[in-house]
Image 1 (cartoon, rainbow, N blue to C red):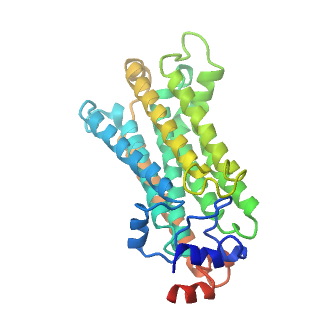
Image 2: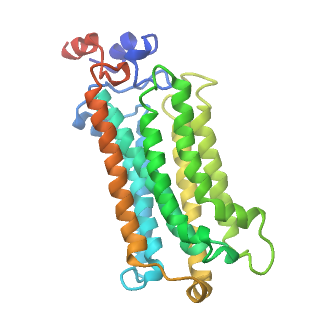
Image 3: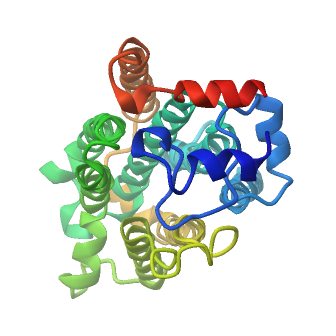
Length: 343
């Protein structure tokens, strides 16, 4: 069955419970919601409303992998504990766009697959927020906050926040049809909260810290651009602009999800450059005044966060599968869709 045939019957004008694949303001370009894995992969080379979403995170994944490989030749990740937080950060920076690209690629295999793909996507974003905390706690903390109570508990709190973020964002998919506004609010809060917490050191350095002990150096411009693009990312995610103003005009190129992918990646690029500057410019001072990171504090915390987030995702997946017969959001398709697929 062709895309136009399917969505002509079940797309724009169908009931909400028939269109969990429907996006606000996107009128065409949908893939069939019963696509095979091969169909999903092949669709990334065809023009659909997901194609640019896939590539705007798949290509940056390899850019960040390339940056990591180049840096690995000049930084001793194995023996110098000073670089361990940055290593954890780079791993998570490479993980989140790759997971997002996979989620957009395979999200039309079924309704169950769609929810599970985005559970994984939310988990990767939550872990990226932990990666930011690793790097900020190790290299970007204001001088006067080093060895403070906040500094000591900054990364553990960020790990706990990642659990909150993943839980809340995964839960937000359940009331998506019945209460779409509540779902959007919960999902937005799930990511705004860890963002605000992670960037407390940057907000302080940019807004309130002046004088010799405030770490005002060449990294500030990079952090400013990072925060600017992060705010643009959040605005695009929440507003659904420009497609909300002109439904159908931006179905394939230029809709908000594509734009916020681009802003997120550009913001991460500026963040990476600023962290590198802080890591090098402050190395002597931090080595003399801050406690060195330990293996347990870095990779032990990272492992615990990975396992915890996977457990949360597994729990929501089990709830999803058990509730599929009673909750309309969990229905893969209505009976007519299955009949149409067989034609």
